[in-house]
Length: 307
Image 1 (cartoon, rainbow, N blue to C red):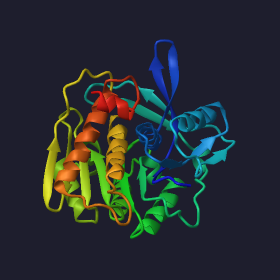
Image 2: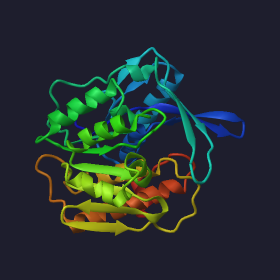
Image 3: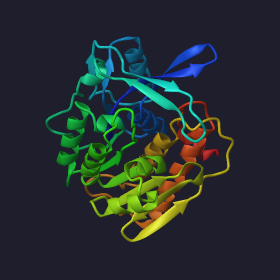
């Protein structure tokens, strides 16, 4: 396998309201990140579990169509996991009702004993990093990667699945301490640390181990924090269709930009303030593009070059 980036986490079917009733949309934050990387032209693989049912076949076909390596996928005869999406208010956002027990989610991904040398970076995200069996695989992969390849993490908190805030916070912080780059939204940080401003909370994470911390702020853009500085990138003015997948698009495009500049892997190029500013600016543009589309529809490189 020649993939430079491995994405670990769930792929699940979002059952969203549509004009003719519920529509089954392929989703899951890690799946979106893998698709986003593939569309930009990155060499990417995904470690997840897929059902052999019709939805699982749709996932497989979509990943293959965008050039994502399927080497580390485990297949199960159990049904595909789902998220029933209920429309919320402008303040609360949509609500999710998940069905994961007894589904393909219960099957751990097919991970190797020895990682290939070509693999420069491992990214993991969302609730599968906190819920077995994937959580155990993610923790082991991040521990093994230390000193051999770079790593990143996006907790993408889902309170419906991890309602025990104290346990979720402890599990998140254990992973934060292992990775080089962490990205979280203001909503994530407000839920995890209700007594702290999101900027203060994510800066505190830098003391646990990461070199770079990214805070996404919706229509206000994104901010990057390092031990030596702070960068704020405003969001471009756009007409928003919806914000589904915007954070995932930012994550995938950030990793793509870093990989393109040789900034991932054991002997990576320096993460200077000027380089971080360029990478994050590119990522914010990609995220904004996704917000002009319906659903999670991340850009291809030509979309950003022509914008």
